[in-house]
Length: 238
Length: 308
Image (cartoon, rainbow over all chains, first blue to last red; front, side, top):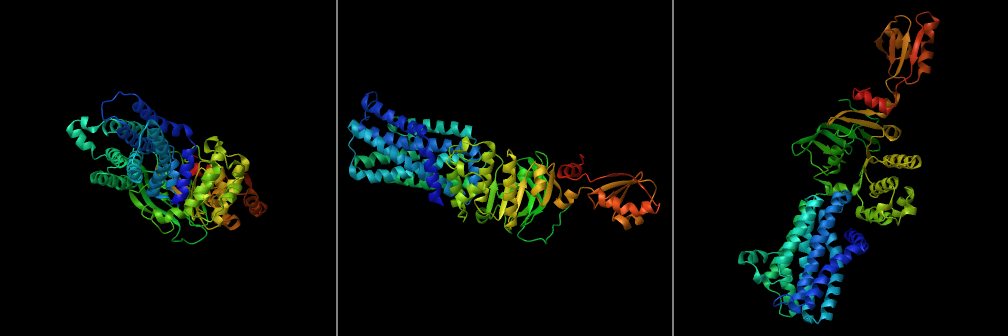
């Protein structure tokens, strides 16, 4: 049942090339811009920048893209009809996350290739660890996106997820180091899945390993966010 | 409230709605709803917009909990036992409900897979005249084609209980005939079929009983045989006649005054006139006027709602 649903969702995702291009174009543009134009202070080097952009791509597709799409699917009653089938909210959240994660994997491959073309040389041994961190981060962000979409009106979901995206873009160390943030904000943001994912990707791809705290934050969010999203999910429109 | 007895005994696996109240926040959508939808029958649910039909049906589907009263579907609680009921339930929504870019064929195949049913998707597409549209996305379908796809998704479960919301809305005559056939076949297979509709002429053709909602309450549930018979034949006699004498010749009658008598059990004037011939021949009474039944679901519902 789950595999049928994942294949269905994946086909629909791949059938929407404009959306795919958009979620790829923004991080790719950031990568090329900051990788070639020297506008940011150190440590804006490729080992810092590329994992940050990879993390941003995961966040864009899973939390923002998936969350907003889910909100509008719910408002059009597309999900209500699925709610009357044996699929259930847990499989819905998991199925959407897996389908989106598959597309994200392709995005990461393209972005990684752009990074290598710009001169980035990741530690090969860290790639599987980075993929695991991206998977946990993606599951966590998908849980947050669907969690918001499953409770709020589509228009409110759109605004809320874009606002959250902006906050995370600026504060989660994708392209700006969190050491520049006020101490209280930096401490709070350490517990966000986006920050932990960015930190884990940097550590893994630099070959220096991942901090245990980052694994703990990622694992907690990856389990809790999808479960809470499924538990609180409303199938019909408000 | 008028209750419908039906031709067969009550079954614990029927759908039973008992004194249900449904509230959304401070708004009471349904004050008091009760009816029974039997296995093997089509139960039409009718009434004005905002009467509480959809809220009650959605509670039966497990989408909402009830504030008071109880609902039993196939002996299960639709909310608590939703996971057990879902594989056996077919739902046709009135509007929307498919991803705009999803294609007809893949959507039907998905729903068959989700229900783990033995229904062949291609067979289902063929039955509802959708085979030629299998690769067309939902957003490019006409209103009638969307309706037929919605019905196909409800049938993908090979359901034991089906909730169909306005199944003939926006359909042309041929498609209506197909839907009527499908709905009757579903009931014949032993399923409970609940159809919410405003199209009373259609409901009259495929339903076994009708539940009338108004103002958040069920006014009653009526057998379609009674509905089709209407309120009987009216006949006006030229002089007073003993009621017992009339009952003897035409069966039960109601004295409506001014020489008018109503024969509730008859719908055709012919047999009534024929039955009264001996009275005329004997010089006991002659027929001054006679009117046939004002049958039909629409006039029946109007009378039930006190608007006829």
